[in-house]
Each structure stands twice: as C-alpha cells, then as structure tokens.
Image (tube, rainbow, N blue to C red; front, side, top):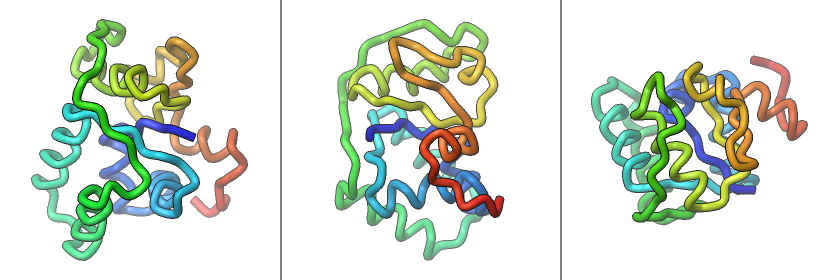
Length: 138
C-alpha cells in the first residue's frame, strides 16, 4: 500500500503517539512511502530546524538514503486543490504521480478535502483505525 505522509506527521512521530505508529508501518515495510522532490525537501528542511534526537534522525536519513521501502518521483502533475494553503498541493501532486491510496496528515487544509481522485486524506489515527493497525495506546 502506497502512502504520502505529511511533514507534520513525520515531525510528530519523533514524539510518539499515532504518528510514530504510522512511521513504524513504513519502517517495518507494511506501507510504501511515496516521496517527491518537493516533499523530501520539506521533510529535510523542517527536520534540520528542529532539535531532534540525533540517533533517530540518523536512522531516518539512512532509510531515505537506502531507498528503504519507498518510491520517489522527480516529476509530479501540478494541481491547485488546496486553495487555503497552496504549499500543501505538493502532497496531492506526489500522491497522484505515484498512485498512492492515502495522504496521512494532521493538516486541516488537506483534511477538509477528504478525498481527491480516489486518494483518501486522513489523520494518522483514522488511517490506523481503517487499516486495523493501531495499538490503541496513544
């Protein structure tokens, strides 16, 4: 199953909870992470600004470098779906380019859309619930 994970979920995963459970699904190869140049650039930019645990950050960078259970595209379609925050369009563009089934996000601008071209846009908790993967502990 292919998923696009919004930057806010990636960053939140360093603090545990449902976002961490979602990232663990990728790390443990239950889902395939879809990345575009724009999405990866935003991940790296935001993560570099945060004072995160260096071991966790190094492990994540190693997964990216090895291409660990991910697909990448340099070319995406251009869409203007998220009018209230056009910068969020990159997640939809990535999902379209790589035929992802889900965009997992905590961003209300994206969540308001709910679905686009068959791509479901849902929270980490909803994704875990829909797929029956949640641990139920937070």
